[in-house]
Length: 394
Image 1: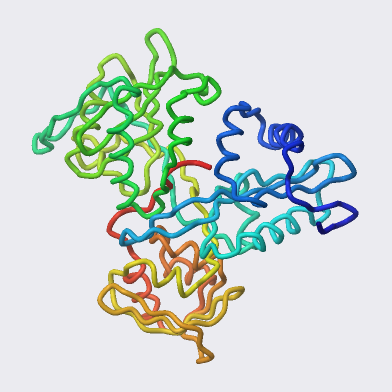
Image 2 (image 1 turned 180 degrees about the horizontal axis):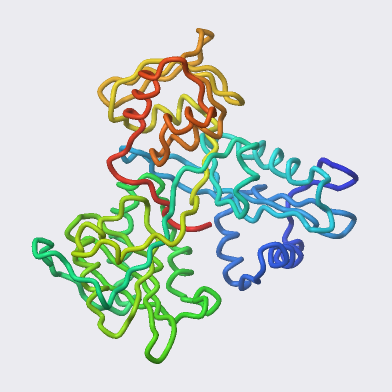
């Protein structure tokens, strides 16, 4: 047990979870069902949850989940998935958050990388986390959408009952996540939670419907009533281009709905398939997964690269490393040589899955390098053929 500002920092105990649930609901604005909390608790390692207590009151908390992250090239790394980070509004500005995260980072032990989703984007780069995936919210005018003549319908989509096809859906997701940077392995208990389709998860929509293709699927809900109805896609996984085209054709072939909404990484294929690409509007842009690279050599050597590069990286908060990439594979080792490139740990986390470019950080003076050619090589090396996308929210 440690302390800060008169508060006790300790491991969460069974008797704390009622108070923790109340604190989470206060901070995030809604209660999560007890059954859902119980499911998430099964993914927390021993001593993976910490609380800050003022006497008998829980006034701060955080935990991490035992997750598996797909990186560019298809390798999978153990990832500590940080979640439920919150401090009571009665105890702000006392250093509680910093102390909780320091304790949690210490407990992560051998995890080479940590990740989280940030409810407030201005907080976590100071702790070494960088935004590593980008989510664009898209709205499609489905009544007016027409496909180009050369956007042939591959077919193969079926309307299914979700539970009847659970094994098939899980198998397709597994293929999707193993090819997608940011994909996360999904344990059986999390699939149980998905298929429970709780009312609290519907956000005013219907129970979910599922479209199934041999190489992809869509989960969606119906929103609205009467003459104004829309389809809200909650999961869209496609392993092949044919599957993506076929699923989009089916979604936009439902004549009684005005709009389809979906979240996708930048570069969505749909506008290129339509005669009028303006019918696909970007209505929002947010960060998804944030990454903190703990073991820099292990993590940089795990992924593949699209171009050769050889340089010394100085990572504030992480160390100095010689990075040598040849034929798509990297060797990375601690060095005391003069650096070619300097950045902080959060920037390295943002570059890792290929969603952000080194040249953009250089323009913002968050990555420092005197040679533009070196920055260009970093851009080419860290790019990814498959856009990064978070596998599921945690």
